[in-house]
Length: 281
Image (cartoon, rainbow, N blue to C red; front, side, top):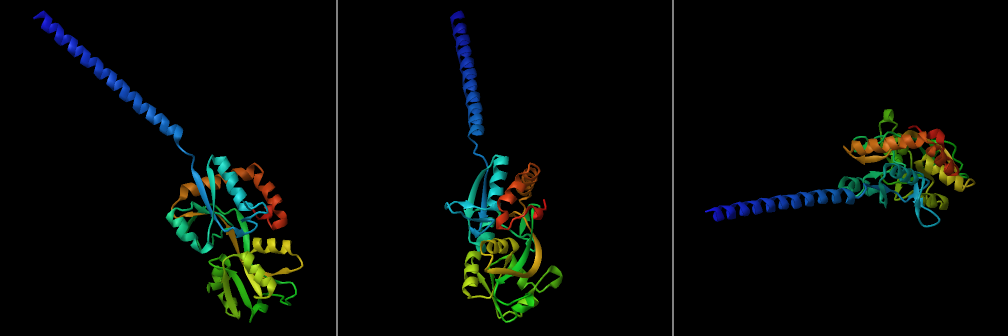
């Protein structure tokens, strides 16, 4: 009887020890898995959609690499936040679909926020801008009214196009002016737009002040600004509702400004039409 009882006790003890060891192994395995998950987490990647033919904000440099004022700003923000940066050149008229699908996180490329507030969540505005009209220096045109009967070219789905198609004068619409043109044409990018202007295929280009300043600085004897269509502001555009990411970018930009980085970057691009006087954040 004692032998039998002893056997039962030993068996029970053995089972209890096995259970403890199993639980210990199981618990250790979960903890290890959790630690590995944390250690293996990749940093957030900010995918920036931009027009690669939009100097000085985003373009292909002489070394074949993407560069520009906004792209350098995006890089500095990502470095400050500990994020990875992915630059994604896009067709400008496909930007809505790309941000809606999540292919890109934001549009950061001299992006006008006015009249787009219903379509995007924006960072706070960081740069003042204007929509202007540029003509050849020898065109003889002196003001916007001289565009009557002329062919004016602008980028597809651009802020300039929206201004010229907007018939609400209280919102800065210039549809009445556009109605006097012989034709209002659109094109995929401004580099080709100015090539057409230079060759005489069109009479004027409607574009952002920064674009106009860049082109006039590159060819001071070729172009002149004819007049201002509308004032506006640049901001970073995110998918509607992505308020947290927009706030993080805004806060990082403010910090970069406080540290003096923004002023230095503006000075770097001063000869391309960028000025710290237009920084508004």
